[in-house]
Length: 400
Image (cartoon, rainbow, N blue to C red; front, side, top):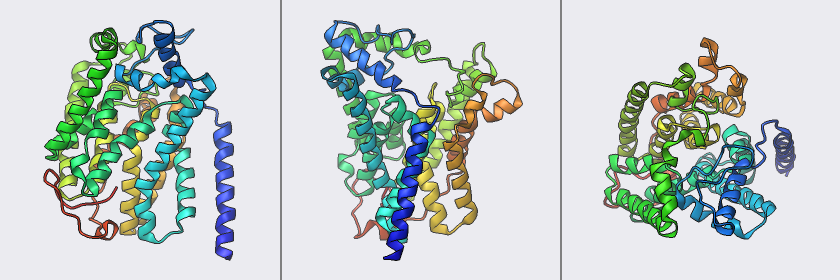
């Protein structure tokens, strides 16, 4: 009873401290991206506007996703602004709860921790991550996309591979970054799931084309290639390889250098992802794919780095399984840095050697995890009874 009382007091203090921090953090984004989505669909539905012509008043920012994303967001045209913000928060919270359930529960169960207290601690830590804070305060869709993709990872891990691929396909149709997960399914021999994901993405894209052929034509021939609609490549929030090169060469990064970097990263990713899948660790395989996607995408804003969360979970799990204090300390250090907003110290000046190191901090973390995320031993105790591996899956089953 005393322990329960202590846990309850600790949880209350932690939740209060987290809420106070989130309410006062200076980098709140004022639901800017919800404003882009809301303005776009309302202009499209009520005023007969074109999806890629709409700009947020007083800015040059407009809708940048594939047309299917606008189709998914059509319900925003039926509600007021406050309701749109509330819906965005609720959906992000639901996605966060799913991710915590999938990523944290196997670790909590293995170590016999008090479930409600462990989930409270994990939830507060999750909320403090800068990519999560930015996703929620911008009103971004990132957490929902991660949940869609990891739903497929969950299906693969629990022996229901025949249904996997739909989540990846939908995520790809909404935003192009998750397309690399189709590549993961291919390089790990899941051809059926890759076909399912590709077919889902194509079907969703064709649906959007059916509803607005002009918008589809504009996106695939113009808007997709116009990075000025999104923002400056050299802006410090762009934590991709292209962002690093753009800050080194503000007048225009070398496309050749960028392509070479992308090819190297994809080669490392394919090698490590195949090894992870062959050992039965799809959780690590999906985590590595999220890291690679952030690196090779031309623009990876800080809020896109929610794709790093699965790799942090894998790293923490590995450290706890091995009882490796050094690895656990490294995990904690990476977590603290990803909460720190440190890259913004170079918001106004990203030139010089110090800026090269500091302004690209999250890129170095992502690259380091891609290169050094340690392999895990299969945990059959977490799986329960033996599960038959369906055709198209490789290795042993490991839960995510």
